[in-house]
Amino acid sequence: MLTREDAELIMRVGPGTPMGELIRRTWVPACLSEELAGPDCDPIRVRLLGEDLVAFRDTAGQIGVMGEHCPHRNASLFYGRNENGGLRCLYHGWKYDVSGTILETPCEPADSRMRFHLRHTAYPVVERGDVIWIYMGPRDKQPPFPNSTTPATTSSPSRARSSTSTATCSTPGTS
Ligand code: FES
Image (cartoon, rainbow, N blue to C red):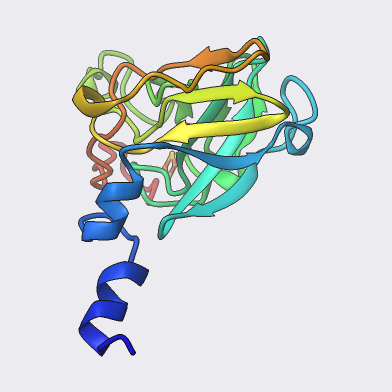
């Protein structure tokens, strides 16, 4: 019979846990292709390895899987608008592409460079066999996707993991 410590060791899969880090060295299934029916469809929630995520298919058909909570003020991107090449947060309108790059920050002054210094957590994606797979580990340890006879569509954020710290909006009255 397992000790409590051994059970904890093999069952805990959140970030920073031994088993969680082991699983994060492989591609894991996040959802089915049919759950993201077409370009600009509604985003879906995905909870995987203790992380709350959202998945969406952008206007060009690329798939993004990223942290559910907006790095600006933590609103849920599940309620975001998937439009014109990105997912827009409903709270203050920040917009993200599938790689987690911030495309627009409409509540900031026009000359704000904040968006160039932040990036939302987004994971590399492969769509294959009607399944959407993601890699949640460190980029320098990312293995190639296993061989398959089915052609893959990939979406590779330039950085898989990044800060999700809450940013400060400089426009008064927008909290
Ligand atoms: S909380 Fe998302 S843009 Fe402000």
